[in-house]
Structures are given as structure tokens and as C-alpha cells.
Length: 303
Ligand SMILES: CC(C)(COP(=O)(O)OP(=O)(O)OC[C@H]1O[C@@H](n2cnc3c(N)ncnc32)[C@H](O)[C@@H]1OP(=O)(O)O)[C@@H](O)C(=O)NCCC(=O)NCCSC(=O)C[C@H](O)C(=O)O
Ligand SMILES: [Mg+2]
Image (cartoon, rainbow, N blue to C red):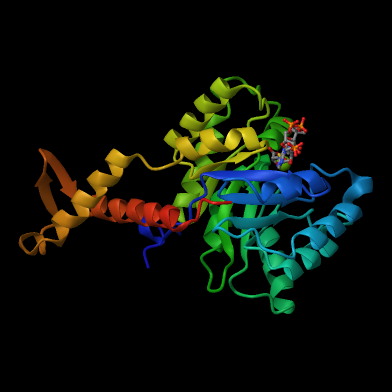
């Protein structure tokens, strides 16, 4: 398989991925009613050290039922190097979420350690790993981290950008338009694309600023991110719109696929369609878009 091919990436919609603090029972209950594509139940930075054990017990009690309606359930654990990491990993594994999110990944070994620990407990192969890229070393090593995911049985499926930690660790100014962050964000996208995994943009802290949020979503989409991580239910609709599918683009994609399917184009590498040059690589991209639209359509919206 061509590890850099667009079509090798999964087509699950991840337009809107909401963090929910693991200790907040009201927010956990509310998450079941929301139209986001995935929910990250957090045991790391949104939970104070003294509340970590209780938060773990809370999600173990409240997440026995999957979210349903095609939404992915993800649990962010504390790093294995912390006093809570190993017990978080066991608890998360027992809940059988779609993925476990590992914070502050800096090296392929950070993923391999978790993979090995999961293999020792016969965790299902379907359990995926997501990696937070949010430190200088994590950004610099993003390519190697993604590359290591291509090993047989590798579980890594998605990079999640941690802009708050990047700002903290680098001292970069978090200005509107993210001028000093953009290069690093695009390195994360590039590393993900090179090895066929997905990449999610970081959070927008000022959750009452709808205009600023919409602008940052549009920027993230233009950078190539698959979706945005969110901190508040009020951000879901705008993220779904920004990272959703434009009906005109979908119609165009269907036209490209149909054109290449015609008998007269069976051996063509390039065709002319509506006055534009269209290559087989465009057909690959079109198929990916159609698969994403189908996955969205298959999701029931009656949450
Ligand atoms: C940011 C908040 C603390 C704001 O909370 P609050 O003031 O309570 O908001 P509202 O009163 O507007 O809430 C209205 C209702 O919505 C529910 N709610 C709020 N947030 C969530 C949520 N995230 N998920 C589900 N439900 C939510 C409230 O309970 C209200 O419900 P109801 O009363 O029944 O109507 C709060 O939004 C919050 O805690 N957000 C998540 C914070 C978080 O998880 N942070 C950690 C992840 S961000 C990060 O670490 C990224 C990365 O690592 C990095 O480095 O960048
Ligand atoms: Mg962080």
C-alpha cells in the first residue's frame, strides 16, 4: 500500500471533537445529547490532581453504555510517567472506547509502550490510539511518530494538536490568525498525511467568541486538518459546518468518479471535464470525499 495515499486514511467524520472533563457528571450526561462527531472524556488537564481517582471512577461508571449514533468515544488518559497513567490505561481499556488519547507524545516509544501494555492484556485490535502533539519535541518528531504507526498491528490513528501546551512550552504569542503557530500546525498535518493518519486542530479557548472561532475553523480547514477539538457545546455547529461537506464539491466529486468509470476513459490517466484537467489523483480525492459523505449520511442525527 502507498502509505502516503489520501485514500488510505479512514473516512470516519471527525469534524467536531468535544472534550468533556472526566469529573463533570452533568457535562458527561449532556455529551450524550450533542451532535458532535466524537467526544474525548478527559482524565488529564481538565482534572485536578486530587480529583484524578474520582474522575476515573466516574467515567468507569458512566461510560459503560457507548455513545451510539456513530459518534466515536475517546478517553484521554494521563501519561504513563504520572502516578495515574497505568491505572487510567487499565480503566480505559476495560471501557472499550473507540480510542485512547495519549497526552504529550514526544517519541515513537511513547506509543509503543502503550501498544505493548494493551497487547499484554489482549486488548481488541479495533482499539485505536490517538496522540497529542503538543510539545516542541512532539512537533519535531511528528514524522517519526506517524511513521512508527505503519508497523503491522499499529494502533495509531489520529494526531490531536494541543495548542495550549504548545503556547505554554514555547512562549509563542497566541495571536488571532496564529501567525507564529501556523508553521508547526502544518508540520503536524504534513506528518499525519505522510503516513495516512488523521489530524485534528487545537481548541479555541474563548468559547463565547463565535466570530473568532469561525475564522479559526476556516483556517484549520484550509491548513488541511480533518476537524477541530472543542471545549464547549456551543462550538459544535460551527465546526460541523466548517469541516463538513460542500454540496457543490460533492456533486463535482461524483462527476469525476463517474467520468473515470466510463468505458472510453478506462485507460485514461487524464481527462478533460467541464473545461478542467482531471487526473486519477483527483478521482482518488473524489472517492475519499464521497466515502466521508456516505459515513456522515449513515450517522443517525437523532441524538
Ligand atoms: C469552559 C467551561 C469550564 C465552561 O463551562 P460553563 O461555564 O459551565 O459553560 P456553560 O454554562 O455555558 O455550559 C452550558 C451547558 O453546557 C454544558 N457544558 C459545558 N461545557 C461542556 C462540555 N465540554 N461538554 C459537555 N457539556 C458541557 C454545561 O454543563 C451546561 O449544561 P446544562 O447546565 O445541563 O445546560 C466548560 O465548557 C468546560 O469544562 N469545557 C471543557 C474543558 C476541558 O475539557 N479542557 C481540557 C481539554 S482542552 C486541552 O487540554 C487541549 C490540549 O491538551 C492543549 O494543550 O491545548
Ligand atoms: Mg495539552
